[in-house]
Length: 535
Image (cartoon, rainbow, N blue to C red; front, top):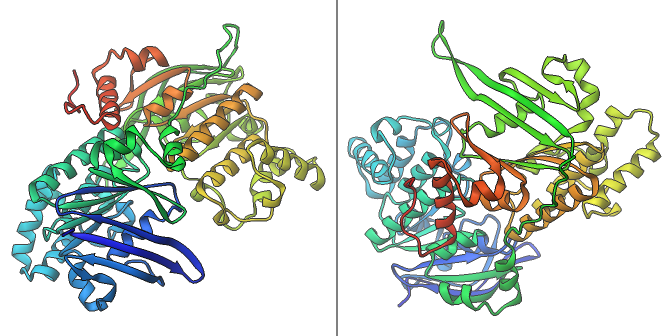
């Protein structure tokens, strides 16, 4: 008998049917993945197992060890959650309580479900943290969530989920926001713990490479329906449904226009150093160097990819190049023959229209209180105040049309759009000023594979049409391979390798670059087992 059997599950929120007649089963010790784009219903389906969807109406059956969870009382479900079935959420920073230490939050699970006293729960907590690979577990147990890195927070979430040795672990996008090397570590940790405890895993993901490596079987969801359900190798080798084939085909493809040898240098930086003053005590401060002696140049129409793990200094470098950093910046920066590193803020303002930014999370970077017309037109109002309202609207419409959006969207607000549409709005906001340079800070990392491909194609098209130069910051080497002419590899604030993209990514010389590529290759090739160690 299956450990979990979902039969004809439908989930409604009011009149909206979000999950439509979905059926699948998971055997004890099996790893099953649900994949699909945002809005496909995969997360709602997974949350239904633990009845965590607020204000949802369910129909069908969810059988766990033969018991229908939809028929249990809320009190009975509290005994199931964490004890028999546990969940790892997508973003540990929001899932963990910022007011309690990691140790307290894990110990609470043990005290609630297993009745351990405070001392025994504390000892078991340290053991769990050690098991998930956290260094100095006794010390880290006393840390608050904000004091841990993204990978450490995710490991703490895994420790909490596994505290009571559940039979089923639900993992909702557990590696989405992590660097490629950390993704591999988390994936291997889940594999190891699953084998050790003979635990079933329900993985929710839009990362097909991760799913290919991890899962025994895969279910594909589209618009609330399960359109395909096969063993992993069979699905990747011979997908039957058109939607599955489209997902598998949505990998970044290189779309880089050749650059003329006569293209002039747009941006030039020499010996750039960025440091932050960190308070160590009431009287003592220490300088933390985030970017150390970096030099680069960028020509018109060129894309320079900047890659590295979190904390490598790549985003700090990008902000410093556009004079947007709060760090103490030393070195020389020249933009369009202007020595902007020596300019005052007022003197620099006229050049701001030529240097624009597209951030990682458009939902956070777009004002929720402004309409699309106000958001896209804001730069025009500041830099071109001579335009009439009619002229300004005309410019906004041109920018929206260039990114594939229509006039009907002018009076709508950011929350009314999908993630891909919001990122297009953010690109339109930057394009409306006709800049020469765009800083793209992880612009596709939060997007589904099909939407990611659409945004990358749009950026490549806009570059060819307008001769834009891109500073493209990413930890996704597949995206950099698809978009960049040149690449810088950063580690601990330093550039450890640079050159033409094909040369650096196909024949890397530095051990750190080789390790990044090994991790990326591992995530896409399930046959490779030797990962993480630099050659």
